[in-house]
Picture 1 (cartoon, rainbow, N blue to C red):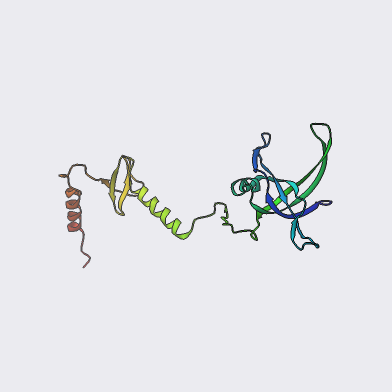
Picture 2 (picture 1 turned 90 degrees about the horizontal axis):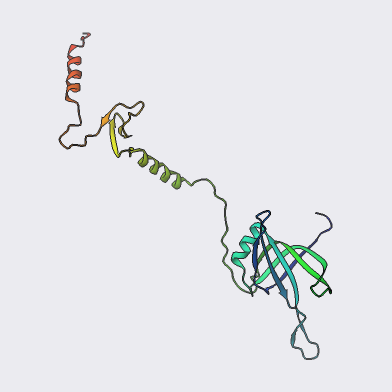
Length: 202
């Protein structure tokens, strides 16, 4: 956008970050005060002296607000980048006051003051080769179990069966009784008799 003041600053979180949810839109919002104190060297004594501490209200929205609410604590050194705005308002006592705010576009820890551990949040994507193979194996195991826990023996091996036949796969339910045979002996005999009656071409 035009006519905007972009600012980058380093400081520390001066107040407890507070997260809110806008009821009308459901948008996440986080606000906190960030302060910084410049230091300068006194020309007379040669010692370093703290200057005047300045404060600014930093406002984060949506995903930045959610992530900042997890990571930031009071006292943390931070680097803030965002859009600066200065507005006037009347205080509770009627005295005009000035609010200085930064609508942050990015916030991070100041690594010149310490170390941080970053964990990137990635959106859900497709499966890797190993995950796909595992899902295929799980699917095959699920197919091998029937609705009633029975298996059907067909030309391609055990096939998932309940009480209904599998389309394109002839077979019969595995016997529940240990004495019952897997094979239909009469069918095997009919097949052998048919081979005996076949005409020999030479």
